[in-house]
Length: 102
View 1: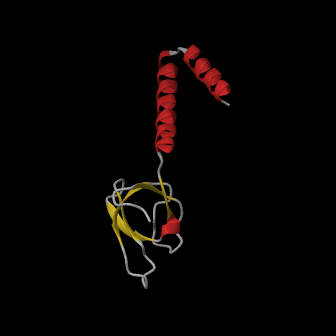
View 2: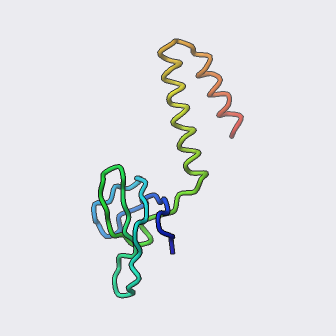
View 3: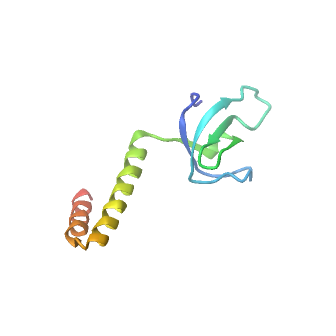
């Protein structure tokens, strides 16, 4: 059972509700009734909507997931700046860092 205001990512749309798969959401309510399929009410800030979902459709976001997303965004911005300023040594350095991480 997830706690309220837990950040989650939408993995699938088992019940064909039109969920935006891959988007971040927050758990804003929990349905305690056993006879109802929908267990969690989630809020998706990107589209300003709420959906009732089953537990299999969502996965909690860990801090490592968000750090990985932010580092990818930073790399994209650095590459854009390097291309605009024609400083290709920045791109080369990023490639070398990625090879060293693997």
